[in-house]
Length: 52
Image (cartoon, rainbow, N blue to C red; front, top):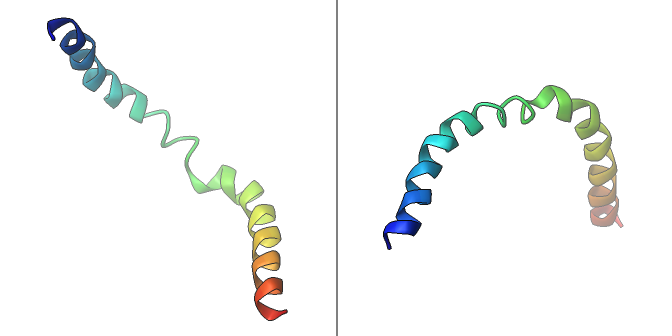
């Protein structure tokens, strides 16, 4: 029980630093470029299917 607890206790402290980087790649700027194309393709398919 003690051994598993060791690594688990170190995970929390590692999460904060790791949480920093994710927000950067998660912003909309990068998704806006690809998201626009993806949204258009998905929107057209969803709308088309609903319309049909």
